[in-house]
Amino acid sequence: MQTKYVFLTGGVVSSVGKGVTAAALGRLLKSHGFKVAIQKLDPYINVDPGTMSPYQHGEVFVLDDGAETDLDLGHYERFADIRLNKVCNVTTGQVYAEVISRERHGDYLGGTIQTIPHVTNEIKRRIQQVAQTTGAEIVLCEVGGTVGDIESEPFLETLRQLRSNLGRENTFYIHVTWLVYLAATKELKTKPTQHSVRQLRSVGISPDMIIARSDHEVTHDLCEKIAAFCDVDINAVVPMETADSLYDVPIKLEEAKVGEYIIQHFGLESRQSAGMEGWHWLSKQIHKEKPKVKIALVGKYIELQDAYISVREALEHACLHLGVELDLSWVHSADLERSRGWGLVQSAHGIVVPGGFGQRGIEGKIAASRYAREHKVPYLGLCLGMQTMCIEFARHINDTEDANSTEFDPNTAHPVISLMPDQQHITDKGGTMRLGLYPCELQEGSISRRAYGVERIDERHRHRFEFNNAYRKPFEENGMRFAGMSPDGRLVEVIELVDHPFMVASQFHPEFLSRPTRPHPLFREFIRTACEINQICCGNLEVPPDFD
Image (cartoon, rainbow, N blue to C red; front, top):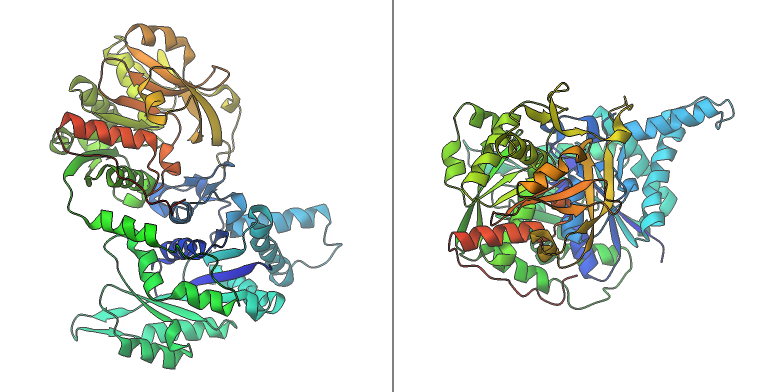
């Protein structure tokens, strides 16, 4: 079968929900029996988001092969339950770097390098690489930003060309747009959507489907109006009101028969009848009344909660699996340094300290680690959260008050966290950390080994500093268990406190591999322990067999 391509563009405003729509559509098409992959085309000139501030684009999502990607790839993997690779996130920076490199190498035989055809051909190559590397039968391709952005123009031109190159029967264009609500007249207006479609058509793309996003009810009359003015089949105008949960979106698309419409356009037939039964089960579990478990997330970037989106989702998955509701408090670690926000920490059933970079707010994270240790509150540390746990332990258990990480104090007398040896002489910041999937061996009898149920695991990493092995013996003598190590015994991957119900931290990022139907073992056991200690009734749910 020739690969089919679904292209998603956005209109009126950014952050309209294209990423979740693409992810949900991936789940829907997969439920029809097709192998899918999803790609994000990002118009920014950065090579990847790895060097961006979390306040710019939120979380950096890391793939198995070490690619630092847009957070939307987290949605893609979680919804469709697939493992993507580096070709699934393309940026303008990557495209121009490749074109310029080839020009310098003489590959263009002295020709003048232009946006058309050289840049657009490179974008085409990268789009078609997805099917080649993943074996996908249907590739969904989301263009970041909004129609009309200058940065997006080469990508839109490429998508226009692909209809001619691949054929109409193998391409499908979806425009996700926002319906503006006027409070004064209490009505939704379609005019911005009409203008957005007109602008899309001006570059040669006529959408086959319009998904009309809104915080308010979208009536059939409005859909008919959009169909008439945008020249789209009425059955291809899909109202999409803001859902109570992201995981309701696939069901809304199913109810609108979006999957069937696209499959029919491609001349295909559904291969299985199980459909979305398991996803309906998931949605029912989400909306059931459940006892609440209070978790405090102590982070540095909480002003933009998308900076911790995978952590939040992993907590949600664990709670869903155990039949409890997540009550998440966002605590700024810098506030803890100023004696603010402690009420949220002290009332929490469990504390999570996630990753991050830089010195700001570090003492607050260390203080949160100390509180969890002294008060026996379940604690889950992720990457930097493991490092702050080590610093706190060294200061207050090993009695080395000036212990620190060389990231924060290069001259510390006790560098319990230090730069990895293979990072010593690296000057470039982008793509140079320990990135991607690495193996770890778990110690028999440890909490982590019990949680995973296996001896050897593979987890995704994103860090430059590590535990200093010179301190391993004094830490062990005072009650620290090195529960997970790299197979060569060189790198500490998981630590635990022996005399604590659950104080576990990992150098890797377990949140990247959590799924709504398969919560990550560390998150699951963290929530389970928090519930048991606080006598919150919970229990494992039986997942329907049609889930992957």
